[in-house]
Amino acid sequence: MNIIVCIKQVPDTTDVKIDPKTNTLIREGVAAVINPFDMYAIEEALRIKERFGGKVTAITMGPAQAQDVLKEAISLGVDEGIHLSDRAFAGSDTWSTSLILAKALEKISDFDLVICGKQASDGDTAQVGPGIAAHLNLPQATYVRKIDTVHIDTTPRVIVVERLLEEGYELLELQLPALLTVVKEINEPRMPSLKGKMRARGTKIPVWTNSDLNIAEDQIGLNGSPTQVLKIFTPPQKEGGKLFKGEPQEVVSQLIEEIKDIL
Image (cartoon, rainbow, N blue to C red; front, top):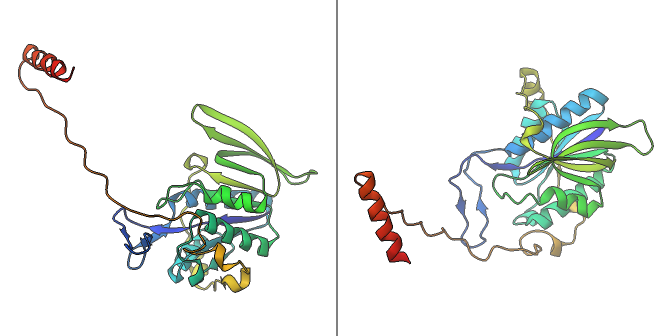
């Protein structure tokens, strides 16, 4: 099976800064890592490959430093990486980002399964994975906690997954190719090996720009994004509650008087 894993580089901190002009994250000079949920997507892709053969390709969109997460994915066992990087992509919202990734998947063309983390830790929208599936008209399952079975020798080829719900799960059968977004309950990500780190260090990762994807410029970047952040602000701090002190009977009396004042 040929599996594509869509990953993202996110800030390795909660102390992020916002560009006041564009209302987008300032990523320069901030330590970055693979989005934590994407680690589970990588692990699941590698496990499927170990069972059925094939290859795993990691793809990411971002500035030059985003190559680091592709190198890390390769150190974990991913076969190859593709870096989508173009100044025209900067500021893309989830719709434009999913379109760019979808066009890259169209260019790759030969894939059986796409796996994404359920959401990115810096945006928390959980929209990009489903957006890719919508652009490509792929069957999709979100919040997947377990891959039950994969039938690649049948016609049609199908995958059966457990989708996490608030109270239990549902069993879904999807025809391949399909897209999954996975939750942390699905597995335990592995650590990179020394051999993997050495291979990653020597791997040259191709960079695709918009000239490779041929997307209309009014559909990508800040100006091509249908949703834009108009204002960012810190919510006002909630006032603390009132503390009653004294013996239990005194506290009860104080509380009763407080309630009377409110009513």
